[in-house]
Length: 218
Image 1 (cartoon, rainbow, N blue to C red):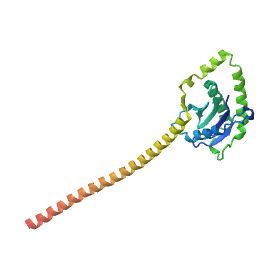
Image 2: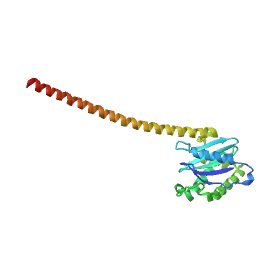
Image 3: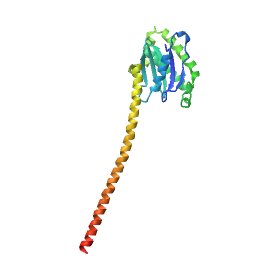
């Protein structure tokens, strides 16, 4: 089951809540917590809304719903269908309880009390996993989550590198936009200057012609 569950705001990576750690699990997941925060910071509008990311012997699964990222760290052997169903349940409860207040959160773990609810949902999925012998129930779950087959799957290094690439491309696009605006302004100035010079030339030619006529004819 999920060894770690985190909720964060997708726009800025601010952690909003987390599961209460089980001391009996015997795992040191501090490194994975740091990786999870890196994933949050790399999120962008181009990020997949459902993704599985390998990290050593474990897998991060996350979904992005209504601007919030729900992430779970699971064993490789844990079925992705159950992991994403678990995250969708957390999304429903969190959205119902705190959905209207998320944009107001200013400090990390503003909704830390929701960790109790995360652990309640997790216990329900632990019991579900223990009853997996019921293949019909699992088939029903697969039917509900048939879209999961299209989930993006990558490793942690590629995920973090992709985030850096998206950030770099965004910076380049912004610079190109600024350069384009500057070019348009310069082009307008040059066109205006050329038009003005053409009018001045016409006026000068007409004046010379009139002066010539005056002195030649009179």
